[in-house]
Length: 257
Image (cartoon, rainbow, N blue to C red; front, side, top):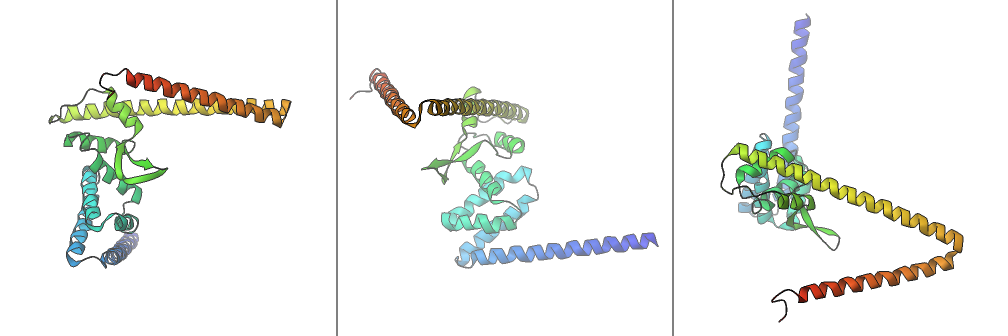
């Protein structure tokens, strides 16, 4: 009796999962259809093919993150940046990939090929990091520019600290070791950056605390006068830095016309 009940329970569980999968597929199809409705027949076919490819590659996630990134790049070229933003917000999450993850894989696929020409090395970096911490988008006027992909500060520091890997090497162990050393150097650079940021924040708090003590002791007029003096001192520092920089440039051969 217990065996029969267990079998019925398993059958019901499979039936529920099948219905959930069917409902999920219908939901994804509806999102894709809505997204492609204003595209030409040819563009709609290409975008749909890329979506099918992304969905298939997702089943072999680690080895095909770069492939998904390349597919996303193809979609962006076809539909344009504005509509691509909607694709990343509506269609990609329906395939089980978040918007931020998709942008990271796209950035990894497009941004690292010139910096890491060896495809085997790129694969090891992706397996070890999922692309996190290596590339980011540039910022202009305080806003992220998704059209330009750059190395993070930590990745730049790590890249500068390591000897380059041979471009055409097919030695997987050598690539894996270089990738591990790169990530280690990147983590060190990030740690140093956090330490500098922490020290700066602590120094700022010390200065503010001393300023408040000064204002409490001598009054707001004296505090305002102190701010004026500090502003003048800052102007002097900026001027000295500018003069030093111009003198340095003048000393470089060929810098003067």
